[in-house]
Image (cartoon, rainbow, N blue to C red; front, side, top):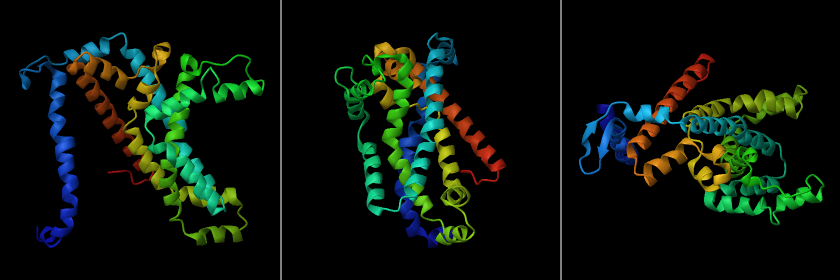
Amino acid sequence: MQSVWNNRYLYLFVLPGVVWFLVFAYQPMYGVLIAFKDYDIIKGVFRSDWVGLAHFRELFGSPNFEVLLRNTIAISLLKMVFGFPAPIVLALMLNEVRSRLFKRLAQTVSYLPFFVSWVVITGIWYDLFSVDGGFINQTLASLGIIKEPIFWFGNPNYFWGMILASDIWKGIGFGTIIFLASITSVNPELYESAVVDGANRWRQVWHITLPAIRATIVLLFILNIAHFLDAGFEQIYAMQNNMVLDRAEIIDTYVMKVGVFRANYEIATAVGLFKSVIGLILLVSANFIVKKFGEDGVF
């Protein structure tokens, strides 16, 4: 306690963060009780009748649940496999660029989409991939790759690819900045020693740069995998339409339609609790595995 009192002014800096978590993260957690109750908005959360796991049985027994889970896992897996390494690759490439002007220009251009909402980005992509004069269709037709314009957003076979590509385009700049900041901490003498030993640029990246940012990669991977079932509500809700609904309906969009539009708050809460439990299991498992391989983990 004496140590706390001596550093009381430093602890004051932590106070706003603690208050934020108590008010916006921990205080609303009592709402998960709705998942186990026949919620009556008049009676409130605590006075509503208990129904046990009835809402979970209804959720898992729903004929739509298999499709929702398949789409969510597939989209999340694509983002994890292809979307997560994309900023690492771009950061490594930019680190090899010697022109400062080009490097800053590339960083700025790649970072700009991060500030744009998914609604605006969806509009841009609809224009780019439009059947009627879209840049992509016109380019492919001029190169002789296609004879007829492709309805990209109306074909279920292309939907996951469109989601992945737009997600990478929007987020690659932000992720790249994190990894570039990590790369700047590498001791330049290591590269000089590698050059003396005859290592080419590829060897320097493989044996110096990548091991140096490995801790950052592992940390971000663990944090990302905790949100594995968050496939991206805003993005998919903005891009989905009735023609691709079989591939576009995910757990989050289902929660919006059932929980908010139909006022079925119990099912929506049950789905949210299910996602949180899966996320916690994945987080603990990933943290345990990386520690087994000698990394620090997040706790």
